[in-house]
Length: 184
Image 1 (cartoon, rainbow, N blue to C red):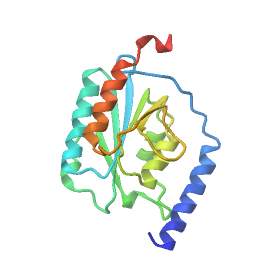
Image 2 (image 1 turned 45 degrees about the vertical axis):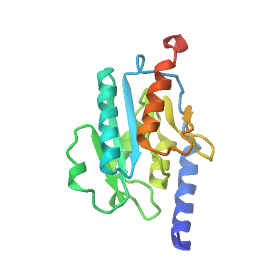
Image 3 (image 1 turned 90 degrees about the vertical axis):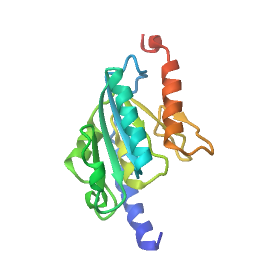
Image 4 (image 1 turned 60 degrees about the horizontal axis):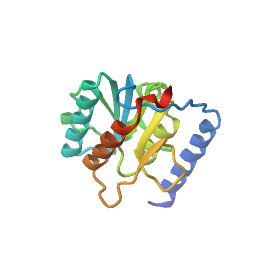
């Protein structure tokens, strides 16, 4: 990245920091049996990872969980093959302001929704996705381990296996193990 890009991201992080100061999120543990709503955030889909996301959405729906998903496509134009899925919304660079803050109404609505579980299926970090994840008002945030202060209530170390299907496999395995009586 060049100096201008770094400066833009710095300004974006300053804006994010100011919004985080007023964020009051209530945490609560959910599993596949207790959750009624789920938000899924992902980034940079290729065809294979997009199929994994669609399968995960189907899995959640089979558990009677209402699913809303949002994906970031880092190009200016989202390929048509990704646009025809009823439970998946996408945004691109065209939906970012000059310091990379996502700026459309559906993104803000996604951030404000109080999902029972928020799944961050992002393998490689990007600021627009980080912005949404940090500000999400979800009760229980789940995602892969990061080096910075965690935004998650449950993290998964996927080590050298940096694949979406492995992350989803870990999420399914460990969330199924969470006891229903945790919230009693």
